[in-house]
Figure 1 (tube, one colour):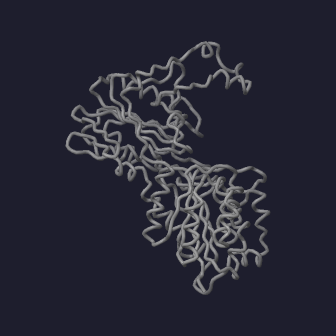
Figure 2 (cartoon, one colour):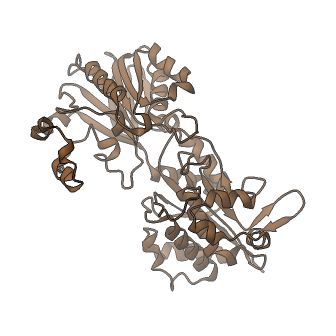
Figure 3 (cartoon, one colour):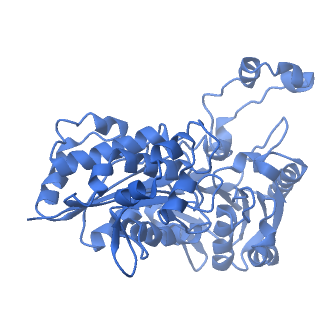
Length: 457
């Protein structure tokens, strides 16, 4: 929370540049002569007959914020540059409004035989997203066993690919390469955008879901009588490749922290639960490391989805030798709505951390502590911030101001802001803390970064 970028914010923003979909694409694939090669996955595809590209995934259109270059459109933009002259056709289903800010990318797609259809207003299926789905089916009809189809998928694709019974199926004739960005904990491919290129071996009865929510009377009888048969053989020539997830995001940040000379540990990419409670767990971890009481409080690790006490004990020893330690984690939490304020799950988590770890931010503290929680999509709730970062002191050109001393002297009550889900207003009134990156163009869930350095006397 400084006039300059604090360390955790610098690590986050630096890694964010490497997490843009086009950067992730360049990490995993390249074109050599007439071949599309994915060396890390031991995959190679012949491009002599060209390829077709279809995709679906959302960007963001939150309240009065402008839409931005969605992940799938960004992925397609990269392929257009790499495969110019080799694209025989394609269709992208993207959120309504994206053309207002990304017309140049859409035009490049259209010049390369890829039609871009905007739909799913307010993230709900509509006639435009249905049209996009119909166009995708028509685009794939001419494919033979010698054709290559590249499918681009990111989270939120379900509303952009609606199709009433009999539904979307891919012929078993063509080769299919699906490139996927995951915004789901655990990366279940059958869940991300509803997994249209994944064999669903355990189908949940749609009728049972309708019964549970008393919605059967709203569904036409014809739809209730319809049955969708799943043929495993249709998936034999499909390769689903995960090109980005929360683990990738954490590793990018880990590499940046190591370059800065920090001692690092990555806890987990599957943190979940209520944001406030997770913030308190991170606070307890920070306090336990600085007080050398980690063994006494080792039970907190299960809440952060981590089990290796030995690794954290090594980090604790490094802390006491004067090293700066960085602990990272990620996943996606939820917010329990209690009030009517403005904020997001990341801003709320950092506020809960600050309240619980207030002693670490006092002028009497012997440690330098920072804690950041941000969304990789650059948007946290209905705000213009990616999240927040709390540091021990706020600095300006004249003198440092210790954060919690400042809060107390200003008469702000952080507990009331937290209770009212008003974390955005709190960080705004404090005069810092909000991390703003703008729309990032990707969505690999959220990350947390804890930085601690102990003063050696």
